[in-house]
Length: 113
Length: 112
Image 1 (cartoon, chains in turn green, brown):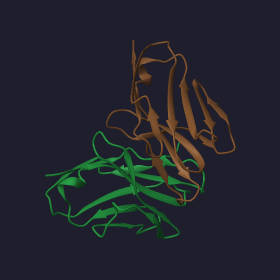
Image 2: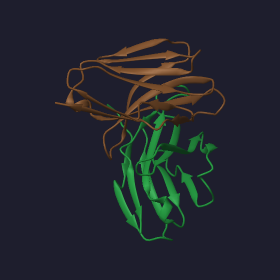
Image 3: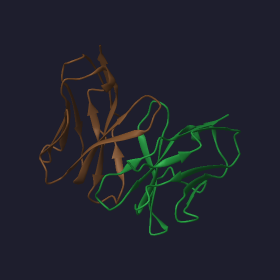
Image 4: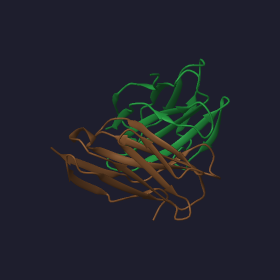
């Protein structure tokens, strides 16, 4: 069964460093998402992406965050200057059509020290 | 309470028993999706129920949706130790674009 894949599975980074989290959505999907889950907390929406542009973003998704779909298959989340509070599990997700099931990847654990 | 709140927060049962988890939400929704998460792992999609549907089944899972009460329930019948996980409901809001809003989840422990 097709799945969303994410790399790396775990990354430890120094505060202030840039981080890029990578995702390969399911191949025929058109809508892409990033969510995050701080340890022990809810899954929170960060950003949605459709037709090569951001369609929605949350208050969490400030100027330190950006997303890109550089080559038609990868979907990346960049955090320019990481803070301690960015430590979380980051999930990529995709769906084929509006209103359909959203499929999530296994997540990338980011630890900022 | 916030959109997509699960009840109870934690549930412990014996293998073979049924587990019922409830979810309440506040807004008008397009659909509601249930996910499962094993500790430290990804979100596995279980069932999507649309706003015009009242009940859906998938194997040992049964989901109901009552839009008049803005609530949904997930029933796992004949539970197994392997069902131990956190279960989340997530709503797709009618007016909030193509995104899901998650509840806090129910932590289910099934004792062998």
